[in-house]
Picture (spheres, helix red, strand yellow):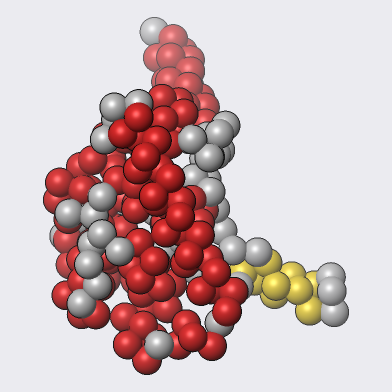
Length: 196
């Protein structure tokens, strides 16, 4: 009986690991919001839950996730190298769908009381984006329907946004404009397939 229990427990553990791992890969078609939520229905449930709680529209959350991690649950920043070959650690502590930094994630956990939140969990990541965006609204006066400026505050932090540090980064202004365009595209797609 003991060996049967061990075999069953091992099979369950392997099945759980295999199922969770699938979520770390990107959906097949990142340019089609309807395809994304059809392939991963739990994404839409998480996005809608965050929208209900924080007021940030689903397409804006999706556009931010797209540019932060391409919907890869365990995304990390690239490694830094010295002398071109010796790894010196990651460029930052950004991790997961939302690419939240360690310290900002800890602030989120403390503020929401969700100490078990994980950056590689889509529900926690979307909740984080909603939480951070409402802080951007409160601290920086950004509308929750303004994907461009929400993204700039998300990337630069609230103090950086107030200092307009993004103006010294033309590449970032380009990304923010692409986030805005993608949010508009995702919104139109979700309305067309009646997921909005």
